[in-house]
Amino acid sequence: MPPTVIDSQDEIIAEAFSRTAEKYDAFAEDHPHLTRMRNKVYAHMTRHIRPSSCILELNAGTGTDAVQLAQRGYSVHATDISPGMLNRLREKVQDLNLEDCITWEARSFLSLDDVPGAPFDAVFSDLGGLNCVPDLTPVIQQLPKVLKAGGIVTWVLMPHVCLWEIGEMFRGNFRLAFRRFAKNAVRANLEGLQFDIYYFSPQQVIQWFGEEYDLLALEGLSVITPTAESKKFVRQFPRLYRALSWLDDRLSTRWPWYGWGDFYILTMRYKPQLLQAASSPPRTAT
Image (cartoon, rainbow, N blue to C red; front, side, top):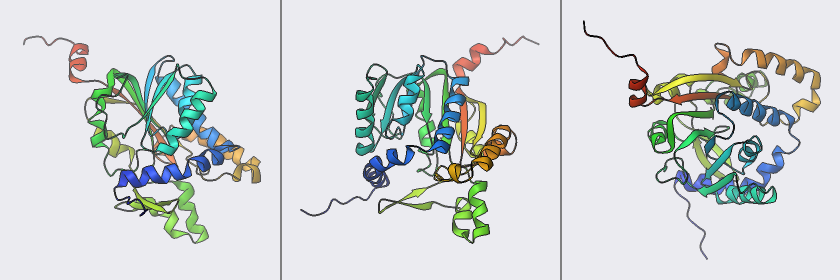
């Protein structure tokens, strides 16, 4: 039988993450730094999204976030294009008896027509799942199909400025140190398959959202602590890691740090024109 031809970006990404699904979960086990990062995302969300809210998750992966959010009282409809990732998600939901609060389907974030359960209270995507398209406008334009008026969008995205990676220049790794400043796509390699990654500044993304969305919160994620790939640092340098984490917590919501880091957390509120008009005071004749 001839090998399957994979030529589109979506097909390549779906296959790459299917191949790595088991490794993805194994890497996350006993990874205190990644756990800290995820917990900061959940804490951010609970400040802006009420418990018992219904959340549409884009790029849900193996369901790590969906499970954690369900255990915090949310209902989640998880979507992803990777069959391997969704298989892992389904197993977790069944093993933990979370069928009542987590549903899932194979779906691209570029195709949000007729999503079951829409409209939702919030739309969520974690850890750079949306950084595989050059422009988020096509995603944002579809949000009114799936998001309630007054609903929340919380996306965790990869910025241009990652101080931990820039520090690699002192080790002579200039390609890694400055890769996020590339004008065009950066080529990623996962399980022998290559696809494009793009980096967005918060200002870019806020501009793409436009006037129908208000910025509620912006927070850097792992601004001066290691990147998510750094699994051993916590155990090799525990005191230094605690000090960096303490400082990281105090800088992450301040300018300019809130737009830097391995990622940043951006939360917007959807205010369509009709809602804005209803909340505006009536005009008086002059």
